[in-house]
Length: 280
Image (spheres, rainbow, N blue to C red):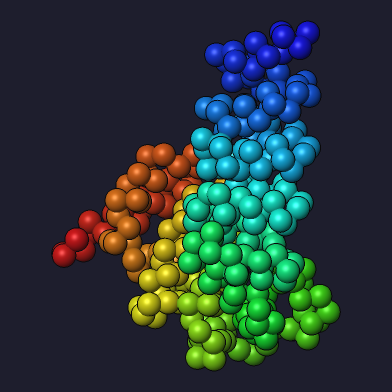
């Protein structure tokens, strides 16, 4: 029976491979499927069935498809394993996904001190979660539940004092944050909350400034065009509108390859605005 399942996971039909994955218990085979299968549903289901952090770590490092690697990271419970992944694979999207699940100050300090990590990872470890006042202040600028929940996990009871100011526009509050804190640090922190539309909008505010922090926000938003959730990709597109001409090549690729029809339509609409500009 085991040999039959192993043969079925190599079947030409993705539906057959998916059914085989549902019955597989051999983690070595599941890792192979998660790393190599060309069908998104098949490889994602293989990741879901993995139990050990070591198997998930293998997918995160060796996977051929970024979506499976990011999904594997989200399932890993050991923060030291996440830190090891960043040290071995210096991919920006993977790095931010790992940071999203690291809360231990001990692990962050170890990353900051270890020259085996790239400069960006060490800088984020030093700055991004060190200033709790910044986290609290960012929470006041947004009322999006996912962002508040992510910060609550890092801040504990301090988040209870971070009620949003209902009388102030979020953009104005973000302007005050950017006047108080290093804008590049703010951009890095918002980039870590990959699943929050509010954080994506905050990056849009930073991008609109047009300085070095704006360039960093544009880079992070560009990476969010690969996010697994269509809603986040749509929000990133909206915030990248001022920079659309600079990322036109990436947008053209997205218009053909994105699996969501709403995202493809939004990309085409944005490309049309670029073509209508006299200097485009």
